Length: 267
Image 1: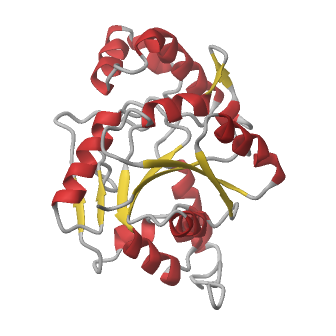
Image 2: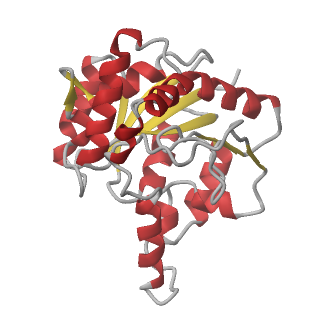
């Protein structure tokens, strides 16, 4: 049986909303909601919070320990290396990538993605093909093999390839990839947490569904927002994937030289 790891990346520092992962909604940190939703995934797995060695992230490690959740501290900026070292330590075969700013993540979609991955001969499965997303921002799922991650870790050089974990896999034809779409295009819904406006919207949604934390679905969230369209105005000014777009711009600023990081010899 394959060892499935759900690796949730989390860090305390945030340019737009510092400390967001431990910022509280109804007396519970944002990260608590992410973990509780991930615990509902039915496919056997191990949840790991992957943060960095920066001292400011110690509260994240302490919080994970308080919930008896595995944790790992690695590189702050080279998140690809952080994922690789996490997967290596916990002997992962299949890796599910989730970010800590997605507290509404639907466990049923993760199970569906795992079913696709485990039943096919794929290196990478996701519900968010670049420029063709159909799921709301905040419901993004990526699954990839340890072997694919290892190749990316060895070969990726661009900053955008190291900060965001999977770009090297997504853009290389050497990997077998599968993307699945939602029945309806819901990509205009922003349900992630990166700004104070995002946090305000998510707080309202969690308050609505708090008593059904183990049961509410993506569809129910979308139905609630459609019944209350004014809520969508709270964070409508922000675009999807702004962090990755910023990294791509920075790549161009170094005159196309792949000099961001060199892999450590002997590791």
